[in-house]
Length: 266
Length: 269
Image 1 (tube, rainbow over the protein chains, first blue to last red):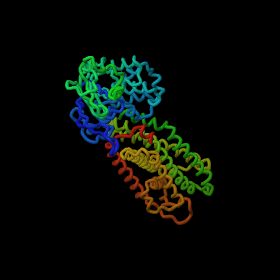
Image 2: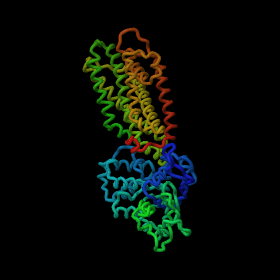
Image 3: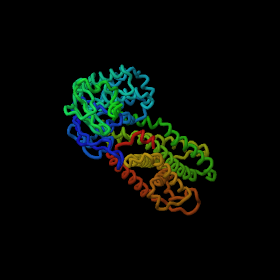
Image 4: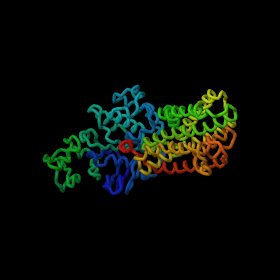
């Protein structure tokens, strides 16, 4: 279980915080939906203890993230920057990280092959020499193959074609553990039944709701009394309401960046 | 031990920047020492031994400092990874330091061996004498101390850049060991006196010189005739050990504190 309590993160002194009092409890599989720049990646970095926490705390299984050292099997993430320990080829890199985490390199290679990437190719390329889509696949495969109890996946669908996105969804559903996925894409909601959904806008976290509740949810640009969830977007109150056939279906938005256009009446 | 040790040693030994700055670039200076600076050296074994000891000590210091530039910069670029693996894999901060130190020492000792063979070979070609160190075990010990200090310094500078969140200074900071090494190189013409004991770079030269030649080295003015004060070698060894230990302790503390700097942050600055 990952617990975030009133978390604030500021990158530079006197700058506006990127995360503003984020609180959430993540016990199973959860999606964090939010537009680009909403603070999702910073939140994941804070959970990994890769960025300074200004105030608040993050607990993993009731232990502060600051206290974890050599805690193999607790947490893994798919950030490219955490897989640059050596400038070796991708094949060796996968073997190194799975060795360090007592993970399963076979699982990683199997998943990578499933996405059509040849292992011989990985022996000739460094991580920085792969395309963005290939990098995302390798880093996500590595995060899952490390067999951690908690997995953080930052935009795992980015730069993937629709067929590969579908395959990625299959791998995420198969994973046995706490999985947090952050994305700005809403199309995948229907494929992730039983997942919880959180929303992140302008550094604030909202939720959770269940995927089933969201599939028919509509966006209303007013403060609705019976709203499933109220979000603050560009200083305006936006409500997610049960479908009444009046508002815009949340799943009809290609991605959540469009919510700003709706808030501005476009 | 994990796979990291072997893979990092291989990565350092095949790193083109290390091969250039620590071996090819220094080879130029080996030739200069043999064929230009060494023109006034009489072809007498003792004179050649002392001259070779001076050359090896100084060139080794420059060579190791050159390698430390690359080690420091590779650590800076992988700082986020270091943070991640020391927290969420079985590589604890201490084990990481141990494996990184061991693999770096393997690479640095290999460079020292290449430099030794090179200096011995080129000086044989120039003077017609094979000059072997008076105390080979002592020389290996002094090389080990030198590499340990250089490694600890490279790591300390790199961690300081990360903790202070000053990636703008990263290039300058990573070249600092090389700059300081060239400053110590000035002892060939300047007498540093007691400052020698505070300068770990001068201590490396002094200790290597001592075990190579069997004589206590001067505190400076290596290439200038006249009266010279001599280095207390025990004190120089003590200083080098103290520097290495203090820096390694600081490194352990800093490693637990640092959160890494993103590659993009380094590139954009």
